[in-house]
Amino acid sequence: MTDMTHAGWIWLAKGAGAVAGSAISLAYILPNHRRDAAIRFAVGVVCGMVFGGATGLKLAEILELTERLGAAETMLMGAAVASLCAWSAIGLALRYFQARPIAPLSHDRTDTLHDEKGR
Image 1 (cartoon, rainbow, N blue to C red):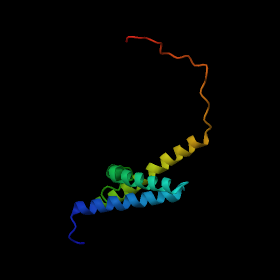
Image 2: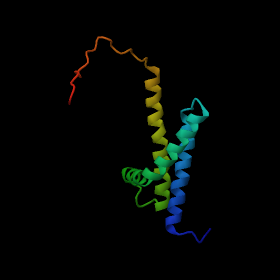
Image 3: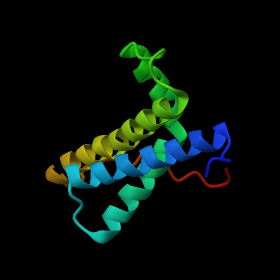
């Protein structure tokens, strides 16, 4: 495993951070069904892999840790946070909208489209 390139370590750190963030998000907001858990895990991993680099760099900059952290540590941190935030935000939004009752549509709505034949 010592033959792994620098880019390989970065990808491994991103993947580990994304999986860790997804696992934490599953424990933080418990899903209702197995399907919800699988979707949340998959979305968390993808978001962690895609947005992990930018998130890690921004967090390191905000926390003033850019000189103290290596590239792999920055990617690990960013992927975990991006993965955790992806379903934390979406999960909270879903719970908010599921708790609200759905109002019936108004029946006194007039149709704005007129019958225009030939057009």
